[in-house]
Amino acid sequence: MWTHQAWQGRFVPSSLPATGRLRAYAGWCNAVEGNTTFYATPARDTVASWAAQTDPDFRFVLKLPRVATHERRFVGVETEMRAFLDAVEPLGERAVLWTQLPRSFGPPALDALGRFLRRLPPGIPRAVEVRDPVFFTDAGAASRLEATLAGANAEWVPFDTTPMFATPPTSDAEHEAWQQKPRLPRRTRALTDRPIVRYLGRDAVDETIAGWAPWTAVVADWLREGRSPTVFVHTPDNRDAPMLARRFHDDVRARVPDLDPLPEPEPVEPATLF
Image (tube, rainbow, N blue to C red; front, side, top):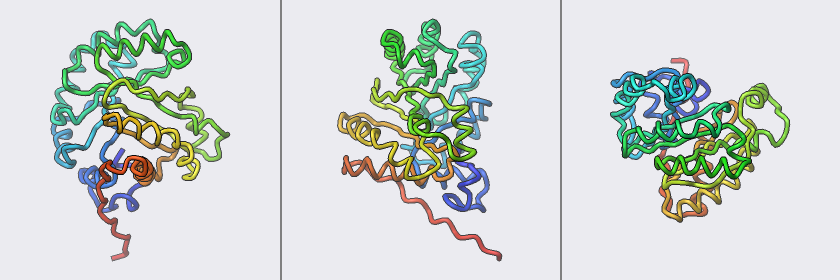
């Protein structure tokens, strides 16, 4: 995500090679979603470079390979998972193993999910995102999922898209989000001491800020309870995401003044002709 084209020259210097952009991104935020790991397992040396470019408290929420979560549904994936876990080992406990499941994954598959989660290495946080609406509308299904996650000390990751679907889309990026993103109720219950929230606002900055108001109170309460949450702020085009993430952090700090500030980003040099 740190190589997002719209951020070059705004949040990270345009002149940086790809291998240096994570360091620049880490001046804005102290966590990142690893979506590319869903499609291909990175080389171990590449992951080691990620660790070297970031501070020890920087978090990597890494999506597990799709062969495990979508294609084979946890069956016969030992080889692929060993390769993945070996590749991300340089991050240690800075990595969160993120299992994102398709809408077709429902309650009948929970036993397989539980067995898979319990086989993951101890000590590395793990989190699960589900998209079948039954988990959000049926108390029994939600209870079964929570019990499955509790048995593996795994967090339930809410993907809050309610602001996106509050009013019709007004841009191409918003139209695409309407077609692709799940439309699910907001869920604010944490199961572990490291909850994770994925929030999707709108392309309009003021609408995105207004939409996250419920989360500032929830996250502040989690912090007062001694939890250590991670919140990812998205918009359909993600053009202003680093700035918005810092604004969200500031809104939470207004409620929890002893929360540490985010790092100060290095200034981005203006483009010149010479």
